[in-house]
Length: 289
Image (tube, rainbow, N blue to C red; front, top):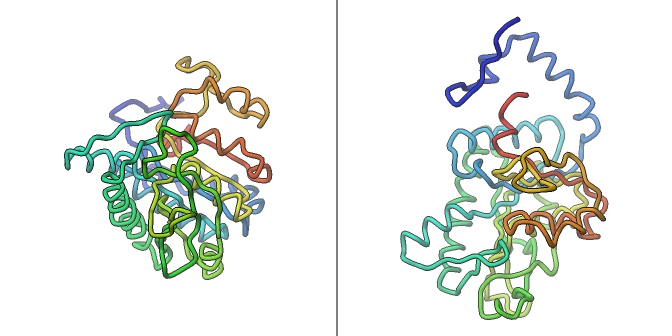
């Protein structure tokens, strides 16, 4: 029996390390899944290591193109936590988190907008379009199309003077138009204030992805993270949950760590009842089992 190769120094390349018959077997095994999801909208929240690792960035772009080529309709929603934190630090602007959410000051909002729409979105669109003219970037403040979503200031009183917001409505028509045109929408998680369209708010990307998935009637919402998924008793790695019902998830919410709670709260919303939800590790998604 061949020795299984794995460890920090081992890199598995699906292009060169699989025999032709193994590649054929993978495609055959994938056929039932491809048939089930053919023509369906799949919303993917781009995050985790896929946003900072150059290899994973390219792999993610390839995966989105693959989904489109086999008949699915991927829609990407992204934030930019690591990039925003790096830029704020470089500019000497203080950044803090409360309840797993960034407290965005008006001063920081300019940086958030610049990073999300000017750096992260453009880079991802470019990586996808290296394979063809597929991706189009947009955000909630684009005047050239109907805003994908609008927001209001965080409900929590302590945040009312901040530039962070909760999604309150979604107009998915612009995204629908791009899907109909065979494009891959790449949506930045900033949106205009519902009471003042000239004010732009920073929206949690997990919440934005869930809201857009519900508005599109997406078949699946996938949230990429740096961890393997939801744990029943974190940090016990043996308590990883493979599947959970909405009611059980709601019961767990008060006890979740601050970083995981914003990802799980939208997934438990009644508006997501028709959408299958999955939290996926960006590392595990590229490591063969």
